[in-house]
Image 1 (cartoon, rainbow, N blue to C red):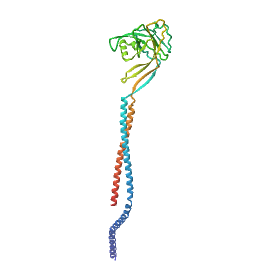
Image 2 (tube, rainbow, N blue to C red):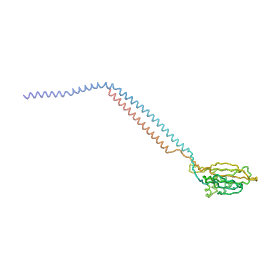
Image 3 (spheres, rainbow, N blue to C red):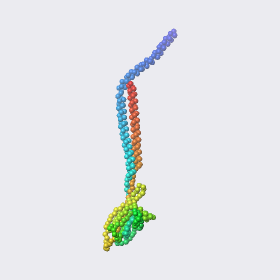
Image 4 (cartoon, rainbow, N blue to C red):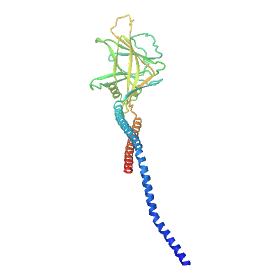
Length: 350
């Protein structure tokens, strides 16, 4: 009784297993059919969505055009920067070649007493006095020897230009105190001359004390005559000379001294009773103002400003070049990405 029942149940179990083994293929076929259905259902949606890549492409194209415009702008800025570098270097070289003259003034209360070298020839010094505050006492005995209150020295030396003729010079110490308006008043007398015009030559040099301390006074005077200009004052007049000192600094560091003069001439009224054939010379020396003028050439080109400007320009150049390189890389990357998406869309459509 049990065997027939077992055999029947065994048959039923075997039939169930066979059905289960056959079901997977059916399920796979059903899943593939579902996939085909879904793919057939999705395909029209992808065809309908082709407008989205076109919008993406237009945006990418605008970005590329904008990047190209920016690239050209930065190239233009680089060209301007290069021109500025060239112009800056050219201006710096021009300023080095053409320095600007600078004039400065230094106020002093006492000058170093200048030396006044007279070449009187046959004329004779009658009097020499220091006065203050532009006040000169009236002449008592014009044409007669008076007091010589100035420091004077006489010297003979050969002419520096001919080296043959001897020259006689009377060197007088000039005024010092510019605040008190110190002046030196000198009177010369010439007893007679066969010339149509009578005048006495003189020259100014910077320091009377240097002349006194010089061991070779003849050579010192020769150097002064070679370096300084000489002037004249005429007989029968009172010549008032107002001096100003100008110092010039040379490029090699040397300093030269030059005198500038303003002269005024007043006629002398001779009240002597007897007619005479002689000539009287009157001359006054005074400082014009308490300012020493200093002239020097200044190079206005500042190398530090030029270096700073060049550094800024080169930094802008490097930044512009870096931006241009990144822009090109970005454009290439966008192009590759666009081509990749386009190939993916085409593959998906196919």
